Structures are given as structure tokens and as C-alpha cells.
Image 1: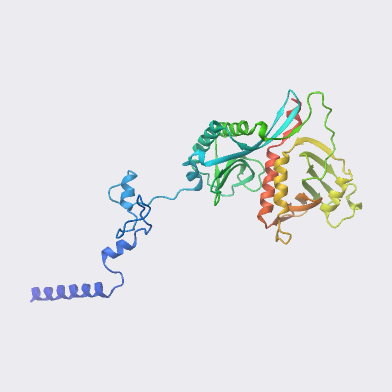
Image 2: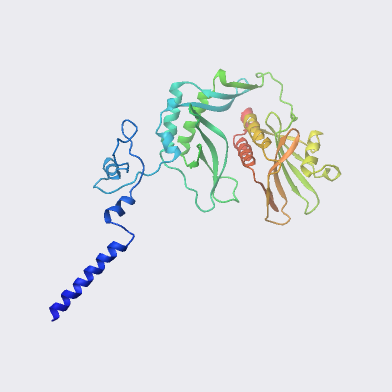
Length: 388
């Protein structure tokens, strides 16, 4: 009797399992496995899979070819635009850059901009660059950020229109810091990546690029006329390009700042004593009119900013939407404001402001202009360099 009950119970369980198999939506085991595989087309030598061929990617074959095989299904990891570029050949691209040099013997400064055409130099540049891009990008953590990158150290352009840029930036650990170590910024058609490169490796690539672009064909501007030239007059050349104003009205009226003229010369000024008597629609307009009139005790700081980079920033600023939204965020009290402007057709156009209230122009052209001006500051040549 006991044996008979056990047999009956087993039969009921088998029938129950069979019913679940027929009524469930999961389907057969082989159907479940097939549904989880990739559905990308398997390419053949002719470009198309033959008729009747299964178009599911043979991931088992990929695993074996990569040395991980054992029959397990292994998907090929996606690669970044930087890694893709590093795997190509230098002959696929045209190389463009800019540079400036000061000849201490002749007291002449030369500015270069254009294409690098020497094939041997291009190949060496691409080799060094590829080695950097293959090392893996820098992942920003916590409050880290990278500033700069408005102007490229090197631009690569393909015949199909792809454009890649290598720029220099500064890595800071938090928003309160102004300085930090230099890093490379990679800008592809669809991505922006950062690379932390050793100083010797970074400068070797930069020196190679600068030597490659310094040709007679790329010489666009020369300043000075030899050792007998008269000292450069310390007066600004208009129109101005860049203006930064420091203002605080918590205890009296303090208005000062710096500006870059049309040739890249960097000046400081202080209008605290007279600004209250100057009329104008905005503080920036009042400051600019004073500078044009020669007021404010304008002093040449001895720094020269690259006019090519400054003009690029100015071009971005000119594209800012006049109706662009300005985001406001209260931060402090009685600290004052540090405001940055590009000068367009003789009128200051605000790019950003920080202090008691942070003001951010929500237009990507403003961000690009700021990067250019940051780059110009980082690459400044000082009068100390010239006098040494």
C-alpha cells in the first residue's frame, strides 16, 4: 500500500511539471539561449552573410581569438574614440597647430599658425600621441575638474571630415583651487576625455609639434625689428579683446581689473577713485569708457598673451545668443564680484561672474570663450622672458 501511494504521487508530480512546460511563456531552453545572444550581422569577405547563414555574432569565436576561449560567450568591449584614433595611421590625417617663439638675439617674437607637412615629423608626432592615448583616460573623482582646453595644441583632420583635438588643461582637486597639474584634453567628434601624462612625455610631444609648425609658410606675424628697436610703448592698442573687473561696494567703491589689448599686451587698472562720477548703462560699460580715455592708472604688467588664442575666444563670444539665460546662485556676502568679459565691437559681453552671486551664461559659446582666455593666460610670455 505504501509503495502504491508513492507511485501515484510521483505520477501526479510528473503530470504537473508537464502542464507548466506547456502553459508557461518562457519557451524551450534552446529558444531562451538564442534570445540572449547578440543580433549584430556577421560580416563576410564579401560584406554580406550568405543566404541562409545565421546572422548572430559568433561570440564563442571572439573568445577563442582573444585567447580567452574555452567555449564561453565573451562580448567584445567597446573602445573609446581616443583608442580608435590611436589604432589608425598618421597618413589618414592632416596636422594643424600654432606656436610662438622669441629670438633673444634679435629681440624678435614670431607667431606661427598652419599645417605641419613634414611626413617624418607627422609620423613621430602620431607615434607619441598614440602611446599616450593607449594608456587609458583619467577618471575625475570627487570634486576634481579640468579647466582650459579652449585652444588646441594639435588638431587632426581626416578626409571624411572627422576632427580630433589635443588641448592642454589644468586639473584641480576642488572648485576653490585655481592651480593644479597640467593634463591633456582629448576632444573627438563625440567625446571629451582627459589624460594625465608625465612631464617629460608631455613636453617631448609639445616640443615636437612646435618645431613642426614653425616654418616660413606658417609665419603669420612678427613683432620687433632687431636689437636696435625702440622699447615698446606701454600703451594699449584698441580695440580691446578681454576684460576682467574686480568690484566691491561693501565698504566704499572698489573697481579694478586687467585687460588684454588688440596685440595681446596685458594691462592692469584701478578706477576706484573716479568710477562714481562716470555715467553708463552698466558697470562694465563705464569701466570700458574709462579705459578708452586712458583713465585708471593703466600699467603694462609685462605679460604678452597669444593674440591668436585671444581672437578665437573673441569669435566664440560673438556667437553667444543675446537671449541666453543667465543662471544666478547666491554664494557669499560682501565679498564682491570677479567678472569676465569679451569685448565685441567695442562693447563688453559678460562670460561669467563669481563672488557674492555666481552668474553663468548658459551658452556653450561662452564656455568655449572662457577656455580660450584661460589658455591664453596659461601660455603667457612675460617681459622677464624677453629681458633674460
